[in-house]
Length: 199
Image (tube, rainbow, N blue to C red; front, side, top):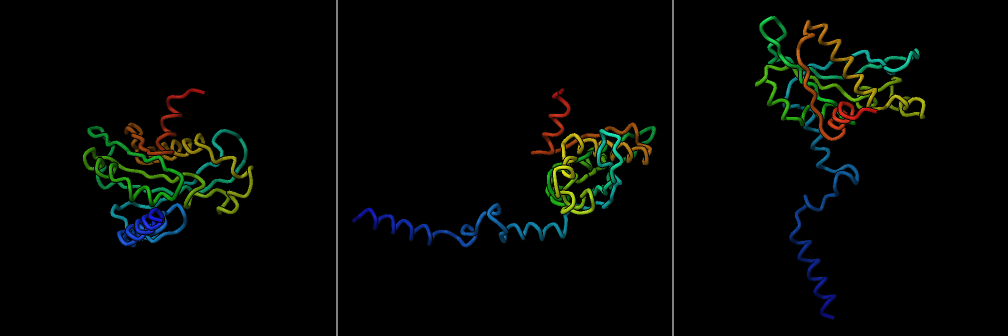
């Protein structure tokens, strides 16, 4: 008899000592107030950048005549020392993860702290098939079947970044500027696995 009473007493103590915040469901169980607050922060980013779009190739490794898509990316050159005979400003490129690029640009403080120290330009390209960088014009069409999803690979994504940065460097006459890649989680693993693992 004492055991059920003790468990009931323990449950009451836990409920009384918990805060309303701790009783909310975690974000992975569905939409939660914390997740919505995070989304509101994205409306007012703490960092500034210019939004651009690049006419990106869908398949970098074949001669198929496939439609291009608009790759969404952010660029900030406020601290870039430029590319000239006496200065060679680096370009920091964040390898976008599987999601909207706004979140990664707003939550990658480390890069933003390094940019003024190194006189760097920073670029945040969005990963293909996520956010606004949607082949075939919409998520519904891009995710329709295996043939449309066939181009959602790490190798195609890395080729996107290479083509974007090569074109950007040419347009800025910055061909000699070094490019430093950043990434975390999936984005960081793409850099490592494709540079050090030879298939």
